Length: 101
Image 1 (cartoon, rainbow, N blue to C red):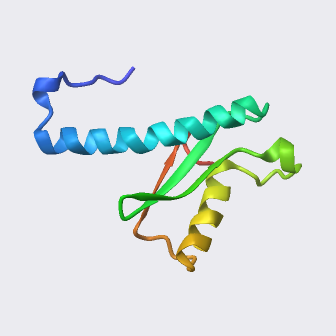
Image 2 (cartoon, helix red, strand yellow; image 1 turned 180 degrees about the horizontal axis):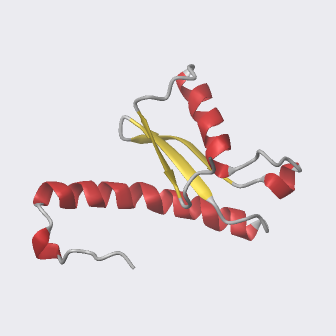
Image 3 (cartoon, rainbow, N blue to C red; image 1 turned 45 degrees about the vertical axis):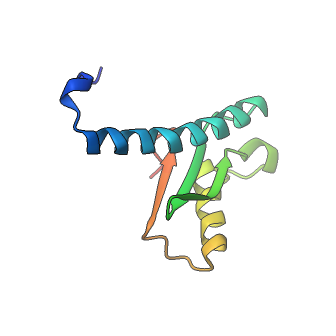
């Protein structure tokens, strides 16, 4: 189990950052719930660019009969299409599991 500092140990800046990450992870969790509802492995992902979600996806391997249809892979493809570039260096990926290697 990870030791969490109590709230008095978290600086205001870190608290704001934690709230921001929590916000985006909730969106990823909602995607994972959608996967669960579709009898997929419940993994969700969102990609954020300039403080907005530009891609959101969940696992679709069963639905698409595609072993590569992982949430993070679909979201990466969506993000590239959204930006018109494969370079996603200023983006942040939030995923409910550690992405596959």
